[in-house]
Image (cartoon, rainbow, N blue to C red; front, side, top):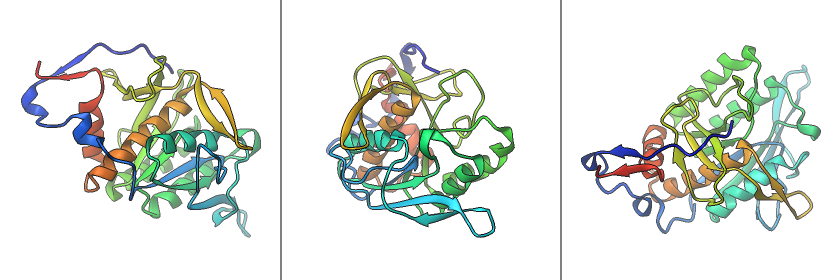
Length: 263
């Protein structure tokens, strides 16, 4: 779901006293912020990723139900490593964690997704990157409950919109920060969309990303736009650790390149 850049949005100057990019993240490095990538795993020590503080995977428990277990840092598909590398480029001093819910070939179940995300929310991570979604409506209510729990726990969920014009979850929930991609080459260009449900657009076209085996690759899609916003959220929370999820979303809005104050 890639869109053209929206037109400039005027905002009265008295609504935005001092809320500028420099105020929001100037000088920040991500220090003190715990970011979790819920995906296919993350390759520890990749030159673009650096250290992964802890790695977990959703596996089948003794009763057949999915459970979360600590595991060796690895990536079964490459997708999670790509996203983690983008986050690290923005926030080099953030603490990166991984929860693997996808297997080889991007295989996975809705039950594993819900289990892994709920577990991550209850660990109190500051920001969770979700470059994945499900189109299955039977998981929508469970994901909505988890997204609301994250919102009230001050855990920020940054979720990729589906690349196709279909309904999927959790990006459509208002409690998350939803991200699509624009075609501009600037990795720090974030645009606000005045016609949601997709709220923000970030660099997601022909993105150079980390890939397992210490390699690099080129990828396109909302999956790779999303960690640009996750990394930016890490910077903002590094500088302003007291912000709620609601306040953080407003900072992203007021600092978006197409939102113009003083008009």
